[in-house]
Image 1 (tube, each protein chain N blue to C red):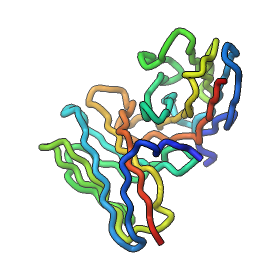
Image 2 (cartoon, each protein chain N blue to C red; image 1 turned 45 degrees about the vertical axis):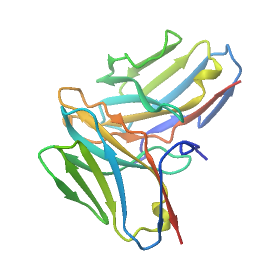
Image 3 (cartoon, each protein chain N blue to C red; image 1 turned 90 degrees about the vertical axis):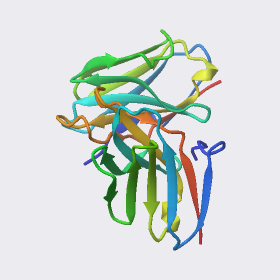
Amino acid sequence: DAGVIQSPRHEVTEMGQEVTLRCKPISGHNSLFWYRQTMMRGLELLIYFNNNVPIDDSGMPEDRFSAKMPNASFSTLKIQPSEPRDSAVYFCASKGQGARNSPLHFGNGTRLTVT
Amino acid sequence: GESVGLHLPTLSVQEGDNSIINCAYSNSASDYFIWYKQESGKGPQFIIDIRSNMDKRQGQRVTVLLNKTVKHLSLQIAATQPGDSAVYFCAENIRGSQGNLIFGKGTKLSVKP
């Protein structure tokens, strides 16, 4: 089991640039979650998908943030334009089908630094 | 490594001692709880979970206790080892939601050899 795979592991970009973070969930999982982690706010849910459909995006900070899940094995989180306050570690997680009460499996995150 | 611990509560224990990490949750409608361990530079890793119809659940060297009356969750680690050093998060799932978890702020566990 390869686990949840995220890329890149680190991203350094300048303010105003577009950033795209990528995630491959565990094969067979039908729910996918994007979280952001900062020292000040901890782990915050940004958006999640069930069966590739966005269910709740109320955690997305602004219109600069967008997420897509074109198929069951791939999702992207895009920030355009990026700002220094977007600097954080972004995690993707997935969950298996059928059980609402089951744990999320996290990737190792993308550390984003916006200068 | 990941610097999530700068403002976190810290628990320092001696190797071989037992550790108890506490968590208060806020929503009485939460019906599922999970403990995660996060090591530097890695994502949260599942340790143990418990449903609200239980008070206690045991795993290998870990025990989770749930007190719904005071909305309190604890994680007990027996015979703590240096490899247990990490940040520990509790997470809750609110009944009626679709499985997204709400995380606590975390506790940093430091094990002294």
